[in-house]
Length: 268
Length: 285
Image (tube, rainbow over all chains, first blue to last red):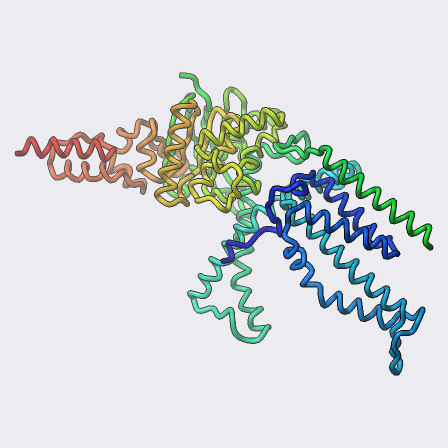
C-alpha cells in the first residue's frame, strides 16, 4: 500500500501543456500569480478564469482533478470570505444586525478573494499535474543558474532534490518493513493517546535514520566511482528544449498581464 | 597478455579511532597482476580485506605503502584520478544505494554527465549500455519499479556506459534472490566474453567463483592462493581451514575420494561431477 504512493501529483498525459518546456511553465505560472493579485476589476478576474479554463482544457487534465485540488483549502476560503465580508465597510448597506453590516464593498472583496485563491490553486496545481518532479527540478536548476554567479549552490540544491525524489519510495518501503518488524515484536502503533503514539514512533524512526545514513554513505561512494565532482563541466542527457508553443504561451500570458495593468490604470 | 592492473606489495591500514590504538592493518603486503580481458574471482571470508582491496583499485582508498597502477597510471596521481575511475568502474552490493536518478536511462547517463560527454554521444552510449545488460526495454522505468537483479543490471549499465577497461564488482549478488543472481552472473560473463571487459568479481559464493577463469583467495590481508578454480577448489582441506567452502560438487568428490574412490579432484561443476559418477558406476557394474 505504501509502495503505491505517487510522487508529487504528476498526472501523465500527452498534451500540449505536458510537452511544454517546464521553464516556461514556471515563468508563466509566476506571471499568472502576480496578475491575479494585481487586477482589481471584475474583468481581470474574468481574464484569469478564462486563461485557467483554457489551460486546463489544453492539458487534458480532468476538471474533476482541479476541483479536487481546491477541496483541502475550502476552510481557508470560507474564513477569508467571512473576514472580508464582515470587516469591510463601504457602499450600500445590504443587511444590518447589531454591529454586523454587510456592505457592497464587503461582498465584492470577499467574492474577489475567493475566486482569486481558487484560481491560484488551480493554476499552480496545473503546473505540478503536467510536469514530473524530476523535470521540474531540472527547470528550477536551469532558471536559477544565473544565481551561480552569486555563489548560490544551484547545482547542489537540484542534485539534493533529485536524490530526495529518488529515495522517497525506497525509504517508504523501508519504513513499512521496519513497522512490520516492530509490530511483530509487539509494538503497538495504533492505540493510546497522541503522546503514546508519538513515543511508539521512536523505534521506527531510529532504525530508519541509521539506515538512511548508511545509504547516504554508500551512495556517495558510488557517485565518486562514477566521476562525480559537482556541477562543473557537467552535461545533461536530456536538454530542456523550448519551441514555438512555449513562445506563444508566454506571449499570450504577457499580453494578458499587460491588459490587466492597463485596465487597472484606466479604470481607477 | 598485457597487464592492466598491477598491485605491488600493497599494505593498507584504516586510521585508528583514537591515538592510543594501533591502526589495524587490513592488507599486509598484497601483490597481484590483473591481465587484460581476465575474469578473476576474489574469494575471502568477512573481514579478509577483499572489499578494501577493491576500493584500492580505483583510488577510492590509497595504499598506506606499496603501489597500485592502472594501465601505467599510479592511483596516487591526483591529476589522473578521473581517468582511473573511468577505466576501472565499480559496482557495489546494494543496487538501491548506487542508483542516483529517478529514471533508469538518466541513471545510466550519470557518469557520462559527470564526464561532460556531448548529449548526442551520450544518448548513443546509454542505449548501447542498456542493450548490453538487456535492460533497454526498461529505460523509462523508475528504479523502484524494478526487481533487485534488474536494478543491479542498471547499476552495471551505469558503469559500462563509461566504457571502462575493467569492472570491479563487490559482492554484486549478495542481496539478490536466486533468479537475480543468475541474471547478474550471466550479464557479467557476457560482458567479459563479448565486450572483452576485464572483470574482478569479489564474492563469497563458491559457485560464482567456479565460473571464473582465475580465483584469488585472500585471507587475513594476504594472498593465500592464486590459480585456476579447479586447482584452488581441489585443496578442500586448506579452503576449509581458511573458513571458506568449496562448491558442492567438489565437496562430494572430496568425500568420495576420502572413502577411497578413484576420482579426479579437480571437478568443480555439477555436470563434470555427474559425468565422473556415471563413469564410476559403469566401471563398478
